[in-house]
Length: 173
Image (tube, rainbow, N blue to C red; front, side, top):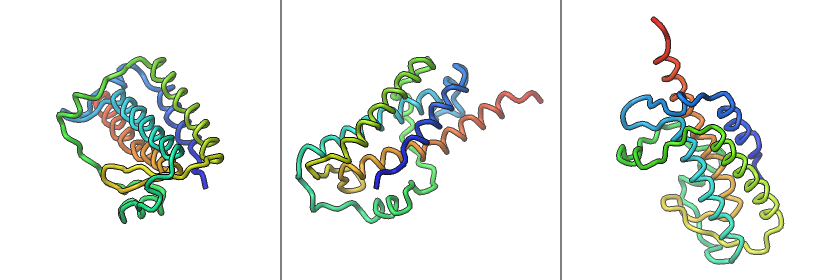
């Protein structure tokens, strides 16, 4: 069954519609992403995950390969674990900072179109291969699609922390 992706994309679009350029550039603490970098991350990763799904529909390789037990639990719950994943602080500076709201809106709209096309492709796929996630084993096209949506939803928690920090930072004592 295909997960409902539309509400998640709409939520990210809504966040962007109410964001200011200053909010997109605000860094809650050294070594943490800005809201603009978070948008770039979810867009880059989502496009990557969807390209993996597309690859799966072009072959029947690795059909018998499995995902890890950790991934099985995530998929069964349809969400990432509610834990804060700390990345390499050096990686923070490598993620592009985009603070152009119109450009990000265009990119989110483009992703929305890709998701819609992917839904149709999955419903009509002729090949059922799998490709490997670096830490979670092998996913088929539908699993990559679901993983993309779960990943975007997982980062809503980070968005909340960034905007809460923004609000706390801008309160007048």
